Image (cartoon, rainbow, N blue to C red):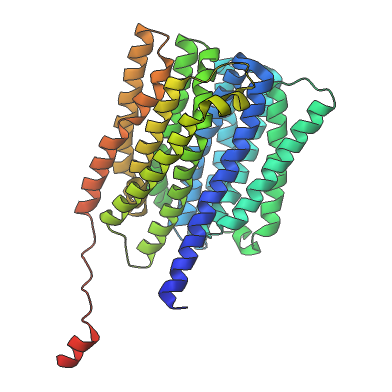
Length: 425
């Protein structure tokens, strides 16, 4: 096989692994949330959805600071490595504290539930750090096995507890997830090379250097999950957690489309970053082609969820409440718009333009939230408008990112002359 063919094969394998691992992760989340919907009812599932949204928000901020630094910078350079060790320790402690405070503020869990949620956040962030090491190594298939372990252990712990007669509750779900995370952390430690866990000097680190990149990157990556969390809080406040459950169930039905986009985004960031480091940076046109392909696949997957709602809906909810079909179409629009934005944002991140990406996406999310708040204030029955408000601005963000990236494109490489032209010369 030629070198070009070998590289293409490796890229396809890595891309397949990146998407597969997202489907395993999302599939596990879907199963756990479907069990929550079936056993807790609409109000209980709405409370669980709020806590899970907080977990996603905290994870997005932490993994963008730590995980993207692992990918874009040389994690084996001692000063970078020392800064990463400090970052992991600080974000795990701070994340657990934030999780506990937000849980108490929302009032959706008691003292035991808040303590379990804080523990889950800490374990989840440690597990996520190991996951991002696999990602930086482009070992997506090994990461898939690790995530499958989390899923199996979590479901086994949950099933064993329910089988023993333990009443279904938010606390039980959190405890099962803690068990799965703990086992997955141990497995990652055993499967990753010792060099990935090597210590580094904790003085004179490059903390300020990575903070200049990771600070903007982490708040940028936190925009989307924070916007989703705020939208959920608005729906619960203006309407009810039962109304939120219908909107969340619609999102779960379109999980394959959202999962595909997330998985492809993981792969693209790693590939764009490696190209930058190798001195052959990608151009904006390549990111646009990725946008078109991803948007097309997201559209097909979304249409599948919409057409199969009458069959899949009862499987997710157990018939305890209805899927909001207006929101279902909205999440399809959200997935397509997300696909149009993510490759361009990944290329901008690889070029270390996180601050610009943050500004563009912050305006997009802020505008959507303001519109949603106005709609809910006027009529609390408009909860289904949430995905439309949050997704439509993605097309404008994509256009702005494309314009910015084109201006920073590297010069085109000259095409070498054909062999016969060389002979003539």
